[in-house]
Structure formats: structure tokens, C-alpha cells
Length: 252
Image (cartoon, rainbow, N blue to C red; front, top):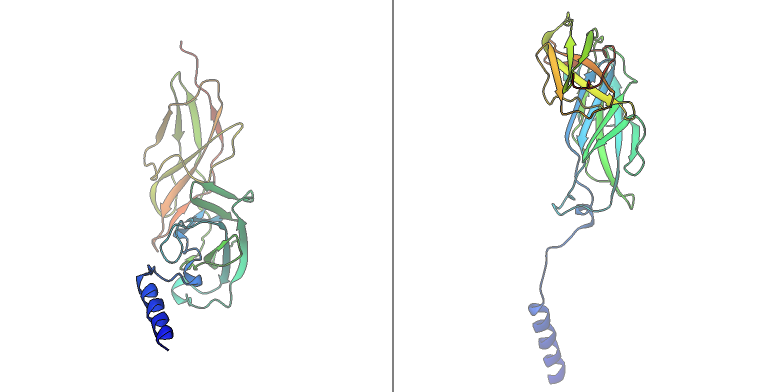
């Protein structure tokens, strides 16, 4: 009996001396929700942007992120009348595999940009995002974002002029609807693909854009979208302008 009592005391002492860390519940090891989720109108399409999570729900560094599921809902109701917590009407719009993104999706570091061309003016579209891990487990869902596209605003008309050290892109028209905010300038090379993100971080309000720091013997193609703010506060990109090309001239 004494030996048994001694054994129990020893086991309790060993247990008390052991280090105890925080408990890691399985549901806290899944990816946290995507961040900076925004949706905007770009011509006749909707541009959805978000940042991939880098932490799990417990706040630890995330490993094994495999992709993101994007769910979509279409409604005839205006945004202010939608139920944000109602998920029954959503359908799986895209399941993005980060190792093999489709053509309509572009990645810029941790930022993902996708164009949805299957939209119509007068409808309301909502999007909700859920990341998933390599083992198939789903992470936290983002808060839904919604947009009500309007009839696309007209495209601007542009021209380009080449100089020895820069290319000047000029805008020769202004949008006729909404409050003019500026222009978004898009550039590509013959070998590259058109980026979903413009050269300028904020809409450019001038009438001439000077592009410098360019490579020689390279043809650059430019397109532009005007940016307007509607009465409801939405910021909308117009249809895409005509494409113009430029290449640095040899020094004269």
C-alpha cells in the first residue's frame, strides 16, 4: 500500500513539473478568412480583389494553403435589402487552385484579382470567399461583398507619342455621366499579358500621362479606362479605350 501511495505521488509530481502549452483545437488550425475583399465595376465586368490569408484562425503562421472557394449570389433586390447572413442562394462560382490559376485570374504576390464577366446591369451580385487547406479542410468565410452594376460608361479616346526617354499618353475625351475622378492607365508589352491592375495607384486626373523608365527596343501598348463616381457612391471604370502603341525613339 505504501509503495502504491509513493507511486501516485511521484506521478503527480512529474505531471506538475511538465510544461503545459496552449491547447490547439483542430478548428483553430484552419486558414483565417481572406482579407481586403473588394468588388468594383470595370467596364461590363465585375472586378473582385482579395488578399490571401497568411495565418490560421488561432493567429499562427499558416502553412498548406491550397486555394480559395468563391461563392456568388444573384438577386433582383438592391443591396440595402439583401440578407447578408442568408447563404442558401449562393452557388460555387470558382474553386481556385493556387498552383494552377485560370486565365481570368491574376496573382500579385498575396493579392488575387478576378474578373467576372457574367453579370448584367440592374442585378445585384454578392460574393463570399472561403480558403481551403491542402488536406481539404475549409477555413473561415469572408464577409460578403455586393455590387449592383450599371450600364457601362463610354470608353475614352487616347493617343500616344514617343520620345527618346518617355512615352506620352494623351486623353482626348471625358466621360459624360457621373462625377469624373480620373483615368486608370493599363500597359502591356507584346510578350506580356494585360494586367488587371493599372499603372497608377490612384486615378490619374490629368490629361497627359508620362511613362518613363522604360526599356529600349520594346513596344508598349496602352489602354485606359475613365473612372467616375456615381450618385450612390460607387466608383466605376468605363469601357476600355482604344489601344495605342509606343516605343522609345533613338536619340536625335
